[in-house]
Image (cartoon, rainbow, N blue to C red; front, top):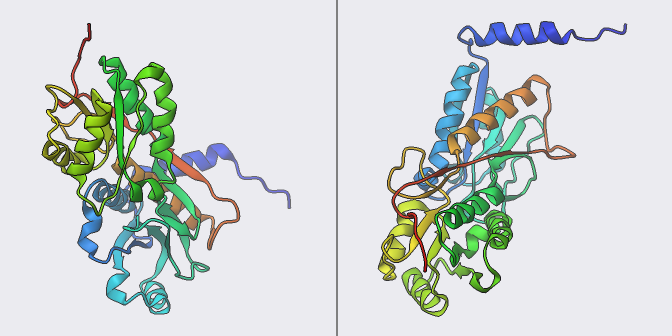
Length: 300
């Protein structure tokens, strides 16, 4: 009949809903595909979960964890459980393995993936803007006076993130003098990491390093004999939001979880189910934290 929604009335309705507590709407499934499910909550992934849980509650949804390993990877059984629990939306938390596959039939669910560790199915995705995170880490080290910025990253992480961190680092090398650009170190995560770092450090002599994994990686660099920050600076690309020691970039991971729920709930309201024909990527900026592992330096 030619009816068109009034955008001002829609905005007013949304405003009124946000001013009062939301009644229970439905369940959202948080899919944990780690073999040891508790390992998912190390690093930034715990912040994904906390942000998603908080936002779900605000919007009247209940976020419930479902552990694939405990279901024996029986996808039909898992689907029956989700349907019986009244689940309408699925948040696919990161996998511990690169190029992971998720074989649940999503035809009756709205679904969003967090990060890029799953190669199948390709869903609407919310993630940190990893290219910019790596670029910002190098940019800030250069601002502090470091010249020979090295980059250390595990091979599995490179695959899991689609080389986005690597791309940001290589782009940021344009900020450095060509003679000071040194090759990155691709870590074999199942090898002796301190030994790999020590050999690379002796050969290339960086004055600062960018890497990932917070205090765990920082400890490995110390084991390799690096004197941080006295003789070499360190910037991490996954600094916790409340960190005061590590210098680097906070990925704003709680916001990633919040925005993933916002996207998912919108899809539920629009009845967008299954695997989308064209996927959207919502990228969340991180921010620099000064910390104490990188400091202002000057060179003669």
